[in-house]
Length: 568
Image: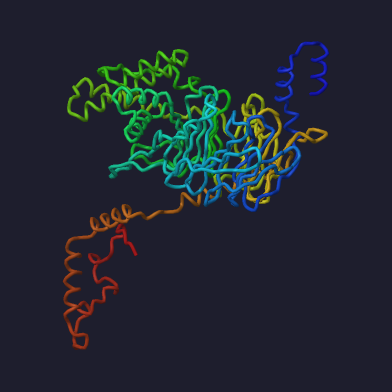
């Protein structure tokens, strides 16, 4: 690799950027990855590691409720302070353009907090918002250095602007309503991330098999509509308008074998622990007890050329706000604008139907829109990655490399897995923890530098230090084979488990009563009444009056039907 770079440099055929990309994409660097150093100053599991925007500092958070700022190259703790949280810290990030003086955090107590650092090392923390349940992840907005998003187990996505230190609930992500249920339940969210190449998009994932992508410009259109209606000073009205605008995701992705049926039940119990965008707009998602799946970027496969039904809705304030927003965002992707317009039209038709003002042609158009919305649920799976185990904890997944040409994940076996993105081949296997590796943070500029953490109380930094490339050997294949067998056994055990819910028990009792003969039921009830009213010491009492129904039946008519379902 280095000989090739020197030759290119001698010929003058490469620019510094080209040389950096050539080195960053070299597989030799990945094969040379080895443990550089350990950073140890926490007293609990390290749940989050994140480089600052320049890559010179590393921020970590732990079960000990402390935030540490490291000079990772020297292995030195620059600052350690209490986060202000009352439960395990799940994520900590440094805001861009804050001179490393503002760190935002979220934790198992549901709170989102900000830490403001002074030049003399003093730290002040402040609560910004609180989720109803644990808050797992934060997402920095690529084009807004003062803004970020949070997600939690209450299904809520909250937007923060540190210039005004205000927060707005954008939406509450909910599962599809089950049969017999009138309302949908909030979806537990484990992950949130913003699209680097389309900053107005963000993805969330969690308690089911779907990765959902939302468009923030819909919320901006709703905000313009609220201002036109004089509701800009009403926080509740603003929240309602945002939630309505973002009710439908622009993409809803899952592998086909995990799609829900018409009853809303998935083929198997699976949920996403983390989903992340690449620089090219692809999405990689890791599932519990399943593989890692790579979904193509928007507009690259099935959704391209999908027909849209015609719109017949009347003009509305939301549409007028949308029109003004289109003029302001003329440089945005035209196809996404059309999707947004169709969704706003669909909401207008639905509102008119609820008020009894819808016409017959509007109803048919609404049904066409529903069919189109269902068609948005596709897989678009480009590649899969396997060999790891994701069962015990909420694990992360990430891209690595100058062009995000590698996929990185932790595992319950305590190893770090690095695959080639395009072919799914394992390229590196590193022992990252004695128990479980959960967190992975590639360096923002150094193409083959990686920070990881897990159950142990330290952080491990990996760099290409080996003298010779050392790709995975036969022991890696053996470990991956054992992991696959373990996942297969756990999946079979899960399928074989029968969960007797109240609905299933009621159905079984109905089936049992249907199979019983009416004469048998009345005879048994009469015998029970005679047995209860008789004297147990009376002589000559018949066996039937003693209620001894466990005796062998005297006739084939009394023999139990083998089709009967008996619940003990």
